[in-house]
Image 1 (cartoon, rainbow, N blue to C red):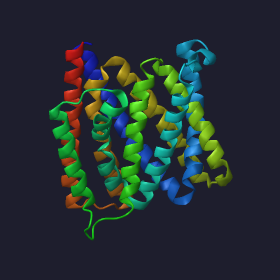
Image 2: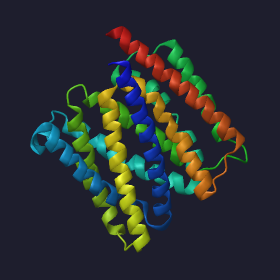
Image 3: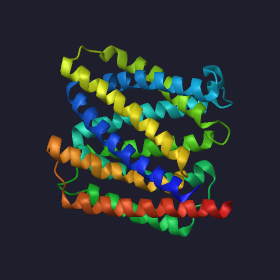
Image 4: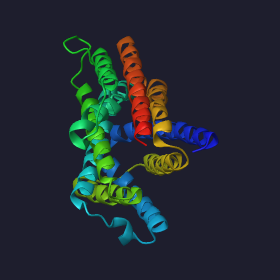
Amino acid sequence: MTEQNTRQGIMLMIVTTFVFGIQDGLSRHLAEVYDVRMVVMIRYWVFALFALAMAWRQAGSIRAAFRTSQPILQALRALILIAEICVMIVGFVRLGLVESHAIFACYPLLVAALSGPILGEKVGWRRWAAIGVGFVGVMVILQPGSSVFSINMLWAAAASLMFAVYGLLTRYVGRKDRAITSFVWTGVVGAAGMTVVGLPYLAPMTALDSLLMGVLCMTALTGHYLLIRAYEVAEASAVQPFAYLQLPFASIIGIMVFGDILRWNVAVGAAIVVSAGVFTLLRERLARQRRH
């Protein structure tokens, strides 16, 4: 990859995180009014159509894109993702965007910690040290045992763990399947799963909320497209650290739109977690370069 491609990939990732920040704000607003399962279901209907269109374009046919030797794992990771999205949005509503994203930021550390037992990857002492420092940051945010601790923080913590498992399974199936195969399974199986659990909660929406739901779907599609483009033009290890920018973007929306409060322990803890996460990602990139 050229330096120009890397710069372009980084810019695409920055725009992606901004779009996803807007998506999180819209998700929180709609989930405060309607059942979260309904919101995610409608969003996934549009996402599934997008995934099928991408499959047709890249694989030549939808059947070819679906072809896999590991259907159970593909379906499992898709179902884990829809559960994670629902849990995270509940966290947005009950905890706020600022604290939810501060806690969720530890997921790369969980990926690094679990990559050994799940993927059989070697994690060196430096990354284990960074993982330990990162979890100190999480404890600073949570402050268990203090009056600041809220049981609602567990929503974001659970979402972080589920997203880490989803990411590891995605890497595992990627050893045999193409990216488009994983993408179409994510969209179609996710839409089917959300329809099963969300259809009983389908309710009429106001004209304004219908418009916002449409904008939410568009931000989801735009964000996923930009993310795909970022990974196409630059190495994932080069652009992945910039995904952390979703934390400040979503926090700004939470503070300005929803009146969230940035407490000192959340700011300090998030800074520790992000620093440890970026270090972990950079060490992982260095280890991958040495292997090749």
